[in-house]
Amino acid sequence: MLQISFIRQNVELVKEKLGTKHYGDLSVVDKVVALDEQVRNLKVAAESLQAEMNLASKEIGLLMGKGEKEQAEQKKQQVSIHKNNIQQLNDQLTAAEKSLQDEIIKLPNLPHSSVSNGKTPEDNEVIREAGVKPVLPSTAVPHWDLIKKYDLVDFETGAKLTGSGFPLYKGKGAKLQRALVQYFLDYNTSAGYTEYLPPLMVNEASAYGTGQLPDKEGQMYHATADGLYLIPTAEVPVTNIYRDEIVKEQELPIKMTAFTPCFRREAGSFGSDVRGLNRVHQFDKVEIIQLVKPESSYDVLEAMVSHVEQLLIQLELPYRILRLCGGDMSFTSALTYDFEVFSAAQQKWLEVSSVSNFETFQTNRMKIRYKDEGGKTQLLHSLNGSSLALPRIVASLLENNQTETGIRLPKVLHRYFGAEAI
Image 1 (cartoon, rainbow, N blue to C red):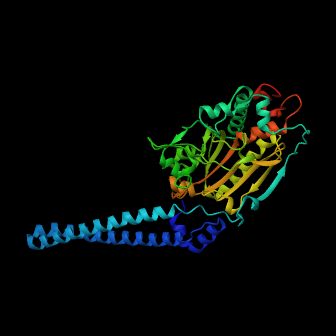
Image 2: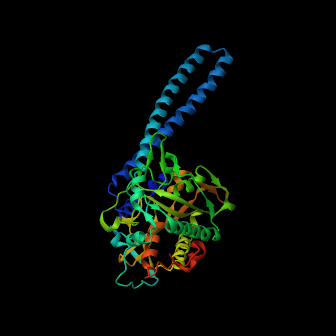
Image 3: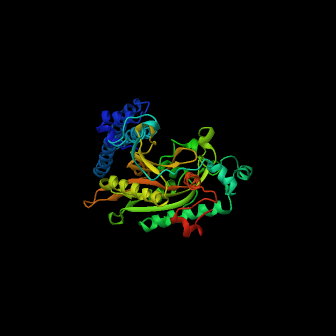
């Protein structure tokens, strides 16, 4: 959530930044400013009346002590009127604060100055591309055929058990998932991230804190009887660990990693974009999250990008890194880098990670703060990244490494998988 003080002092800049994200209704900014002024005026009026009432209450005691009962009764009537007026002002204030909250949460995070004004994924900027795209034989097939050939994933039984988009991994397919998760977690913890195993369902406050609510409620599975949501990413429960807390400065930076299944309802498009493992409703992902001082967050962002890049280098996958344009960024992000790996059999790039800086957008919602050297309480910056999401990594590993005799695995996975190939 944007900070009201910043909006109040930078109305035109806020509108300009929202324009970069192609936010449609800039009148919300004016509503927020007007409601903020109304809230502040009501607070001043209520506080002024409260001061008058407090003074009158003191005078009642003095008048009673002097035996001036008639004047004391007049003061009591005045106090009673003040009480009623204060209550009315407080009721108006509560309503105005709710209206202000309802409007301000409609506004997405403001993009960083480096974000371009593009509208679609085609406008994203390729920062760098690395790795060698394999040249596959004419007999090469996409991963959904390889999955059947080597009996790695059973989509039909998964659909029988749950529904379309819920794959059932089996045999060496399940083992490959476990190998990748263990490798990712070991790599992250060796870089100083503390591992967590969080709940897979969160309450409304947690989903609101990271910005899934009210923006993405349609994308989450909702257990309505209990008001809980299945997590779309480990980012949601893990970042909320520090909700409503003031962190000690010496504890910073806070680095966390977690493996979880992730659940997403979005249907996506049709055809090859959703075939096989390209888009599923349940998938495994390892996440990295950091809470840092504001002045260091963009250096940390670059370090997290390098961290994820090394994973892809070790997996021997051709990849590219994109800086997202304003129109392709998430509601909560100030700056996002996407990682894509090349799928040789499909001849397309597949997104496998997003690494984002949210600045104070999430921490303002969650009230995650720290005290600086001067004793002033400030909001931290939050960042997160996929490290990594498994389905498309598996798809690319299978397609890019297919041979006549099996699937060659990258060297880094040999000890985790227990073999050099499938």
